[in-house]
Amino acid sequence: MSERGTQAGTAERAGAPERRTQADRTAQARRRLLRATIRLLAERGYTGTTLGEIGREAGLSRGLVTHHFGTKDACIGAAIEEIRSSAGRTILSGGDGRRGLAGIDHLITAYIGSMRDGDEYMRAMYVVMADAISSAPVLREAVAGSNEAFRALIRTWLGQAAEDGEIPEAADLDAHAVLIEGLLRGICLQWLIDPGRVDLDASIRTARRAVRAGLGAR
View (cartoon, rainbow, N blue to C red):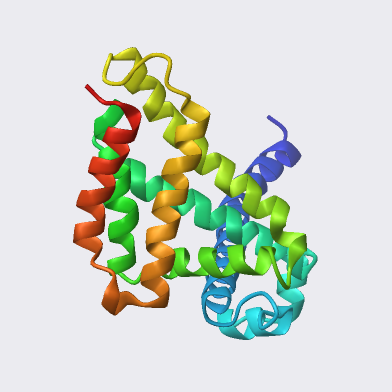
């Protein structure tokens, strides 16, 4: 190999760690901005969340928020996707590969139970849902996509339950997915508004029985 080639190869190898470090820094900054956005959404909603506030909350500049996301709406859309992905990971990680009605039972327990842990991501999602039908209709598409992803997860378990003979094959999976999503969202919304009057443990037990009864579970 020529001396020039050797020098180039050495420079390339020497530069690789720096590029990885820069990529890591970029990813870390993006994570900080998304977490800051989610905290602000949970506390202040769409109107109270600005690019400047996001930057300050993250300990970064407003310009960096614009660099990563472009606009406030794009940043909040990315935050909604992060909430959805985080919730999916949390629910699936504790499921131990459960399928069918066992998966649905786990979903009900994990989803409602997350409220007791003061899950900031969940609180932010409910604030965003309310804003999407009032002060920030621009968020409707992102919220609708998150809701559909949630229903798709429910339909997967319902499909498995039908395959395994746990529920009738003729069960309308789409309708039941909407029903289950509405049940879970409704319980959690009531708890967020008036936690002293909503018993989460009793709600989990009752919801599991109600869903199985509604599905005609054998």
